[in-house]
Image (cartoon, rainbow, N blue to C red):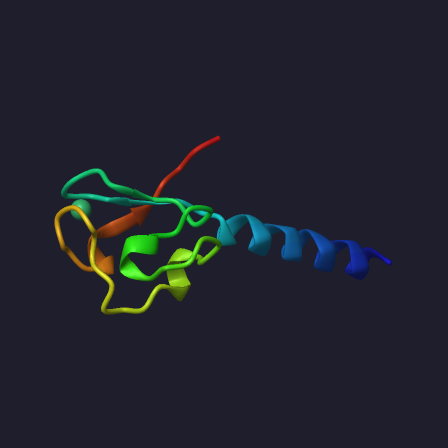
Length: 73
Ligand SMILES: [Zn+2]
């Protein structure tokens, strides 16, 4: 029973992380998974981790390495 509850909360956390926004450190562009980046072929609902590694910031063209998770409450 307890294990089941634990499993559920872990899955909810995963779901939350999937919609995690990421900010481009050099230019401040925010990648929002709900919106994606349709101009670069990233469909809405694509989590940051699932973006291809050759994707670059549409504003300043840096790679994913320059992005960090946006902390928001
Ligand atoms: Zn940028």
